[in-house]
Image (cartoon, rainbow, N blue to C red):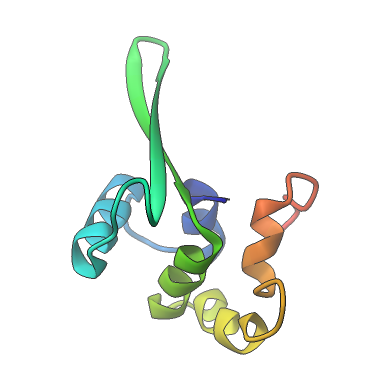
Length: 96
């Protein structure tokens, strides 16, 4: 599973995270429990929804972004491991 916030940051998307993830979920018909799962956590009295994407969905969302990094995912993602997107799934590889 890929943390959608980390993917959003790594891709360099200019929209706010909550706007981006909701728009992409609506545009591509993403289903909670199939394409991603959510959890709500409270921090300092505020609640925040975290999204974990399947690797396939993270790759799909990356390829539709019009950012330099988003365009790198398709050629690198054709092999096993999905290139840079799979590094986001590895807790040790947060140096992107």
